[in-house]
Amino acid sequence: MRLRVLASGSRGNASLLWAGDQLLLLDAGLAVTAMTERLVDSRVGLKGIDHVVVTHGHLDHSRTAGIVAKRHGALLHAPAEILEHRAIKRAPRRQAFPVGVESHLGPPEDGVTIRTAVVPHDCHPTFALRIEHEGRALALLTDCGEPREDAARALSDTEVLMLESNHDVDLLRAGPYPQSLKDRVLGPGGHLSNDQMAVMLRRLAGPRLHTVVLLHLSAQNNRPELAAQTARQTLEQLGRADVRVLCAEQDRPLETLDV
Image 1 (cartoon, helix red, strand yellow):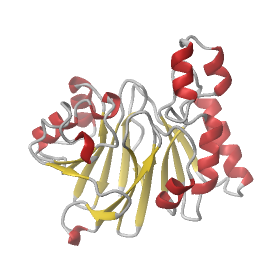
Image 2: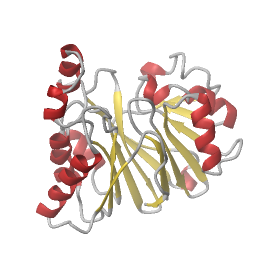
Image 3: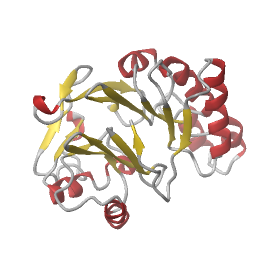
Image 4: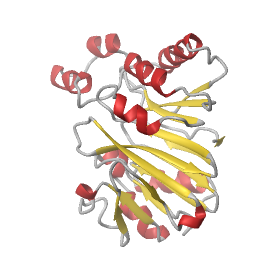
C-alpha cells in the first residue's frame, strides 16, 4: 500500500491510499476546487477512485465526499447515521460501515479489509479505522476527545499510524479562542492534545510500526515542532527511535509513503 495525505487541519482533511488495484480516499473535507487540484497533483484521473471512506459527519471530513464519489463512480462508506447527510447523499452508491468488526472493501479476492472503532467526539458516531492489504496495515485515528484503550486494541499492529495531535494545552489555554471553544476542544468530545497523542502512541507503537503521521494540528494552538518532539520523545522512551515522525499540513500534501 501507499499513502499520501492531501490535507489535514480544521479547513479540510483528505488522504489517498493505494491498496493493490484499488484507490481509497480517506475523508473528503476539502472544498471542490482544492480537492480537484490535489487529486490532479496526485495524478488521479476521472473514475480513478474506487472507495470514499468518511470517518464522521463534520464538514472538514465530509464536505465533498458525495461529490467526489459521484464523479468517480466510487462506493462511499460512512457510518449509517450520516448516509443521508447532505454532503454524503450526493453519492449514488453508499454503504454503511459495520461497527467493530472487520469487513472487505471491494471484492474479497482483492484482499482489502477494514476494521472500525467508535471514538469519542462531538459528532457521533466518529470512527477510527484500521485498513489492511497483503499483510500491511495502516491505522487512522483523528477527532478523538480522549485516549481510549478499546480503540487502541482495535487499531493495533500496523506499519503506519495516522494519529491526531491537535493542540498544546498551554497554547490553547492562552490562545485567542473563546472559552466555550476551548472547553469543547479540551473536553471528552474534542480533540487529542500532544500529551494525549503520546498516550495513544504508547499503546499503538507495535513492532511493525515504521512511520507516524501526526494529523489535525491546530494552526493557532499547536506547533509542528512541539507535536513532533512529543512523539519522538515517546518513541525514544519505548526504544523505538527508529520510527519516522511526520506532521501533515493543511496547505500542501505530504510525500507519498510506502505502508
